[in-house]
Image 1 (cartoon, rainbow, N blue to C red):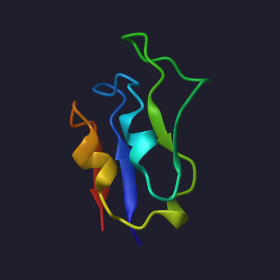
Image 2: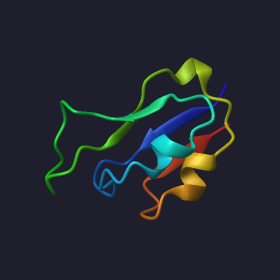
Image 3: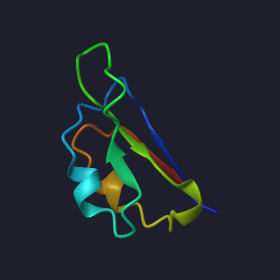
Length: 68
């Protein structure tokens, strides 16, 4: 099973990962604000992750790690 980890320190909430996720399991967390003032991305359902790593490839800040 694949697992997505988003590093809140580097995530600036740009939403590019949310747009490219083929199974729509990423979203910006409206309840969390990082120390830099951003709403970071987070995975809503790890079970549905296919491990395609499109989110990690799209992330300009290298804030996403995908483990397969």
